[in-house]
Length: 286
Ligand SMILES: [Zn+2]
Image (tube, rainbow, N blue to C red; front, top):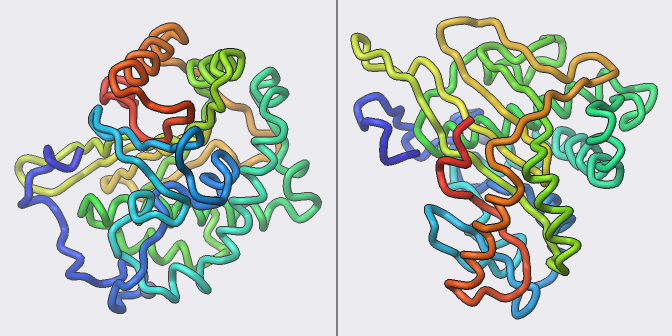
């Protein structure tokens, strides 16, 4: 919710990479490219395969997974975005591929095991996954001009730090999205979905700083929620043990979500396809 964060509490990154301070000349994917390809295919998206990003009720047609519309503003340098974070990206892809392939069982069990995804080496792979998510969160914070605490940046470079400081990250099952996807498949829609929540903040009125910021990223029915709290250094995640127990939530009934998509398609005459992007803000409130 960029427009609602007052300008005087925002941080000016001055065109610099938020990670290392070099000139920011690279764009990280707002929707991860591998997630987009897994959901919608890697070619050009058009005609009956058209992919549309919905922002505040307006559709933006997306041509393919390398489109500018699915990337952040330039807020990293190429080295940090590529070489430096490549191990994080690989662990994330491994994780999401497993989630996609085993989703019915994971939703039914409301849990999964990290050792099933990453094998015997799961503790170190888990740290890489966590660092991918933290890097993503930092890109999002930088785009909304929320100041990233130095300790969060240091955490990305130190594999011995057990938790990302100041950050809570928790994975959850969104049953409303899961139901919608199943319903869409039955109706013949090729329903993939990626979601990004608004950035919500708490501002200290006396010190004119952002004390807390929170949002989420959704891949299909899996929501990665995150909250930055500058008042405490303690961070936590709910994917720390081998067996990860997933809380379950839904904001809207499957019926309400279905009505939303039906209305959008009817009004705009959208082709068959999927809608990565943002539902109306009431759906996005954590
Ligand atoms: Zn950099």
